[in-house]
Image (cartoon, rainbow, N blue to C red; front, side):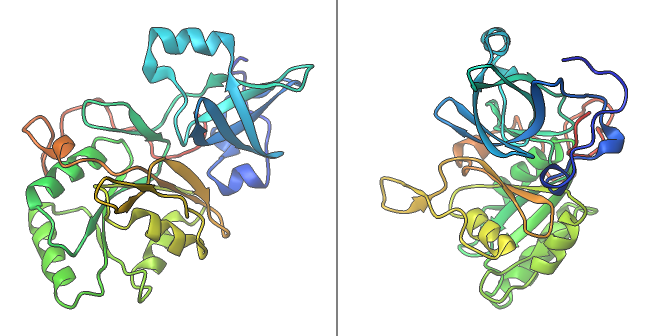
Length: 285
């Protein structure tokens, strides 16, 4: 597969989840197609394509690349080229360049090609502001537009106070207070996703990321949760979920408090230095 001029236009499904033909420089061969990684499932890569969801394995070449550099492994949100073999097997043969990415602190990539990356913080119980600062540092370093989403904002007064605290410490970062009970804030998130954009939700466990995803879709699409030792449900895998009206949401597993501790992460308003900011597109480069 080689980049060569304007890529083939794939209308429909791919456009709804962020494919932008005007930015494409890749074209699929006759035996290949373009798609976007929706889920990783025990070594199988689930790719959304114009033919619907495809269950794919790694090609031999990609396996070699991943062995040499694990960061080359497909992750949720990646755009990729899938090849169909004569025996109907499907393999991911190429992962296209990422325009943004979110990684666990000192860990693997969580998701890629989001246009907006939100630090999700529940209003109750009251969050630890030091952890929130470091979480915002993570989303700032993604290369996408950073956002703070407050959940459970139906708690009177608490959301307003937390919004004020965050505005004082992180001027310029939008804070959206949401509630899956009252529907507050959902219209604003839909507006941010409108036009085929992708919103990634990142935060500690039990902050309401999966419930927020369900609310944006308008149905329970992420019913499967893991169960911790204390009996509480948590999301256990990352997944890209297309929205009925276009755009997509990426739900990610909860970070741990330990991952948001220490001084190695940037704080609010003090993002780590990096190269030129990447365009937050979500489409193939």
